[in-house]
Image (tube, rainbow, N blue to C red):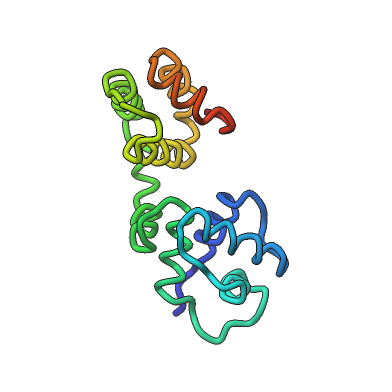
Amino acid sequence: MQPNYDPLKSEVERIYGKRIVTYSDCLTLSKEITLRTGFRLNVNTLRRFFGLVQAIYPPSVTTLDILSRFCGFQSFENYRAFQSTQTKADDVDSSAVLHYADILFSRAAATTYTDPTWTGIVRETILFMEKHPSLIDTFQRNIARTTIGQDIFFEQFVNLDQL
């Protein structure tokens, strides 16, 4: 029995911002994947993955890993683990997560906002919030009270929706 890749397809389309239904969509997505991950996926590989052309074999592990990276995961295995625990994650005490983020952005100090460590922390925070949209409003209110949060999210990353 072949695994169901529909959840990953949906996640890629969500991150990309639109459905993948044409060759042109695959071409643009291929470029976006390269920009975001540093890895290149061939347009025809994407066409096969999204069912625009017939595939006689399943996607490779490398293809699945790159698509998972595009979605903010370390690997396809990491993505699958997240999917299997997503219902459990909904039960996580959101106040504890928000408290951690509040501490991180109120007590930590960055020497410069171009610091790759800070950029990574901000990126992972944004990806986490995208996966848990119910936390965004409270996070935004809490982070707006901190100097670092104001600088990072409201001046450095001002073009992000909902944050």
